Amino acid sequence: MKQEDIINGFVQLGKLMCALGENKQWTNFSVGVTEEEYISLQTIINRQISYNGWFTKKNVSKGLFELGRNLTDSKLKEWVLDYRFSDSPKKVALIMAGNIPLVGFHDFLCVLVSGNSAVCKLSSDDKTLLPALGEHLIEFVPGLKERIIFTTGRIGEVDAVIATGSDNSLKYFEQYFGKYPHIFRKNRTSVAVFKGNETKEEINALGVDIFSYFGLGCRNVSHLVFPKGFELKRFFEAIIDYSEIIHNNKYGNNYDYNKAVYLLNQHELMDNNFVLLRESKDLFSPLSMIHYHFYDSASEVEEYLKENEEKIQVVVGESYEAFGSAQCPALDDYADGVDVMKFLEGV
Image 1 (spheres, helix red, strand yellow):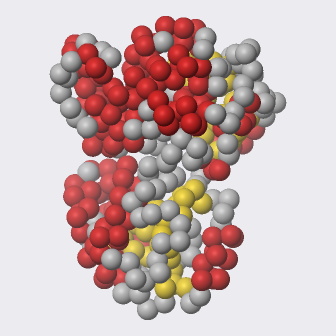
Image 2: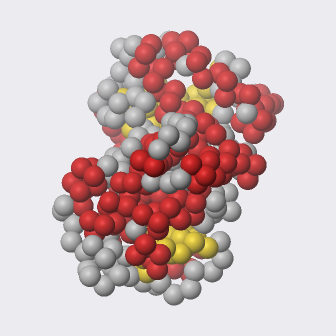
Image 3: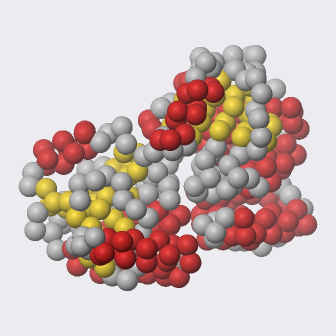
C-alpha cells in the first residue's frame, strides 16, 4: 500500500473531523460519508457524555477539530518528508489513555502513515470515538482494514509498543511490555510564565490552556509563574469568561472538595468561585486548582523549568509558546518530546 494513499485517506478523514468539530450540518458528499452516516457520527459524539462525564459535546468537538485541522495534504506530506520506513509492516501496540477525547489519535496516525499496523488497546473511558472514525478511514482506504485492530482486552504478540498512562502505570508497562521496543509515557503537565506586561486579552487566551478539557490533559496549564509584585486580581479578571465551567457536576464536585479540604487544613487560597489559586512551587495541582509562585529573576524561572523538565509538557508565555496555543500541537510536536516517527523508523 502506498503512503500517498494512506495520506489521502487521512486528508478525507480530516475534512470529516473538522465538519463534525465545527458542528456543521451535512450538505453534500464532500465530507466523504452519506447524510445517514454523518448523523450517526453526530449521535456518537452526543452520547459521549453518557460514557464519560468529562466528554461534553464541546470538548469532543474541540478534540475533533484540533486534530482534523492538521490532516491536510500539504501538512501531512511535509511532515513525512524526512522519514524513511521499512516496506515490511510491523504490528505496533498503542495503549491509549482516556483523559481527553481522542488523546491517542496522533499515535494512531503515526503508526498507519509509517506503513505499520495499529493494534489499539482502548481506554474504557474513550472506547467508541476512534473506532467510529477508523471505520470511515477504512472506507476511504480499504487496504487499511488489515492494519487496524481495536480492543479493550489482550493485545497478543506485537513488534513494538507505545503506551500512555500515569506514573503508576509505568511499572505495569515495564513489566509486560519492556521486552519490546517501546515508548512509555507517564504524568506530565504544563506551565505558564508571565513577564508582567501581558494584556487582558493574552491572559484570557491562557484560559483556553487552563480550562480546555476541564484541565485533564498533560497540555493543560496547572502552574503559573509570576514576577514578584504581579497583582493576581489581573489574572482573575481576565479569565472570568470561563466561569461556566463550574456548572459541570464533575468539575464542580472537585472544586467543592478541594476547597473544603484545603481550608480545613488551613491552607491559604484565593478563590473566584470557579477555580482556586494556591501559592506553591509544586508543579502538579489538583483539578479545579492552580498552583503559582513568584520569581525575582529570569534565571529563577529557567532553573525551575530545568528542575521539572521531565514532568513538563508545554511552557506558554512571551518567550515560549503563545498563550492559548497549548492544546493546538502541530504534527511534529510530539508528546514528551519523543519523535514517534523516528522511533517507528527503527522498529
